[in-house]
Every structure is written in structure tokens, then in C-alpha cells.
Length: 338
Image 1: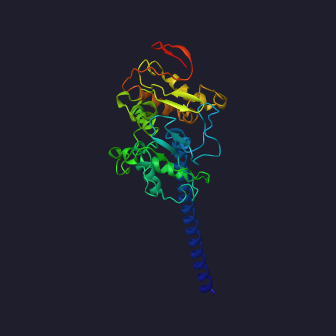
Image 2: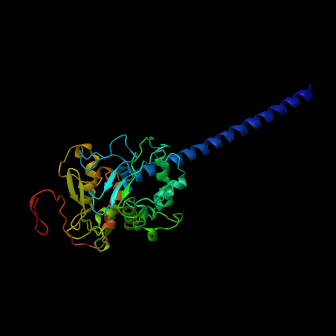
Image 3: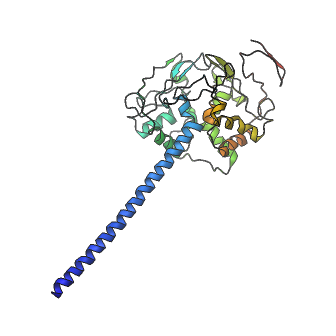
């Protein structure tokens, strides 16, 4: 009897030990799972922020409503592609190009692409089929982005609603080899790191690079950006119902040299309220996606301002709306006629 009791006691102890160990292991596994979920959620959140409000992937790869100020993205079209870019809109574009579908649709989007294939398209301009993308997609800039940020964007793109939309093929007037910026591309982005946010100028330079502000705000001469006038503005975008010149954003008095930080921030934060863009401005519209950029954090907007204060001033008076008759423009007394 004593032996039976002793045996039962040992069994009870072993069972208890196994149970406790099992519970502890279960708790540890649960904690690890929660960590992974939390890490993925943070990656997607950062990717969503970058893709919508900094690198602005979504405004190019969606339909935009230019019956509203700054052409906000049409809800439900996010990432579906089909945005038209051609030489009638901007002289420097040599042909007709459509933005690809970057939703997870497996037939018409990137649903069947691996992360590496998406990364190569974003940073090298080479798609899954091996075709070269036209550099209106600023992959030369994304080639400088921190790899972590790039992977975060990819994680976010995989969460988009799949949209079945076959995008028309591009029609270029030049060989793509003439436009491919090979010398500017690093073979790998593995060593790319974010600068410290505490260094506002360096952080602002990082943001302005991945936001590709220079392409729109640097004048083109014979189809090439004039780097002597970097950020000097003056490109005219001809949209169906309006024409707008890109602003001079250098610290010259003809640019934003007289703006303080609050004025710069207000240029963006004003459009966080729908009432300020939910109207048809007619001829006084803009292609700049201010509604998208309004979602940028205040600290990031301040960093952009800090960096722009350091670029070379360019004296260039830009007519904002070339199609509208005005008497004079205060700076430089430029007369403009219809």
C-alpha cells in the first residue's frame, strides 16, 4: 500500500512538473508570437506612412480626383495603377507612361512577386519580367533609402486590397537605355541606414530624397534636370483643366527665403482638414499632392524646412498659374498674359 501511495505521489509530482513546464512554454510561445505580431504591425504602420505621406507611392499608383484641390486619391483605387504621365502633361516625359498596379492582385498586380522582386523594382527599376522601368518612378532616389524602410513599404503594399486592373503598355519616343540612370544606382541597398532624427538637416535631406521633391521642383532643359537650378522650380504641368508651375523652394527671396517655419508647415497642415481641399478650384489647382503630404508628421516637415534652408539659393521668379491673366507679380514685376 505504501509503495502504491509513493508511486502515486511521484506520478502526481511528475504530472505537475510537466503541466507547469507546459504552461510556461505556452506562455513563452505566446509572448514570442505577440512580439512578432507587434513587430509586423509596426513595420506595416511605418510602410503605410512612407508610401502615403513621404515617398508618396500611392498617389502615383492610384486614380486622383482633380475636381478637388491637389487631386486627392480616389478612395478604393489605392495602388491600382493606371495613372497617366505623358509629354502633354510635362515636356520632359518622352512618350506615354502608365503607373503599374502595385496591389496584391496575382494577375494584374504584384501578388505573385517575391519581396526581392519588389525590392529590385523599387531600387533598381527592373520588374519581375526583367523589363526596365522608366525613371519617372524615382528608383534612383529609393536606391538610397534605408533597407528597413523599403521592406516596411513592401509589407504595407501586401496589405492593400487586391484590384484587378490591367494597365496599358507604355509608348516611349526614346530607347529606355537612354533614360536608365545606371551610374547613379548602388548594386545593393543592404548598407543603407537612416540618419539620426536628432540631426534635423540630415533627416530632412533623407526625407526630401525619398519624397523625390527635386524632380518636380528642378527645371528641365532639353529633357534633363538643370542641377545648377536645383529646387529652383519653374516646370509647368499641363493638366486637362489647369496649368501650374512648380514653386522655387530654395532659400532665395524669389523662393521661400522669407518664409518662417510656421508658414512652411501651414502650406501642408492646412489640408489635414477636408473642408480645405474638398472643392473644385478650377484653374487654381495643383498637381502637388498636398493632401497626401499633409499627413507628414510635424517633426518631419520641420526637418524638410531645416534642410531646404541649407540648399543653394536660386533666383527664379515662377509664375504659379501660367494660364491665368494677372496684372503683375509682386516679386520682379513679371507681366503675364493669357
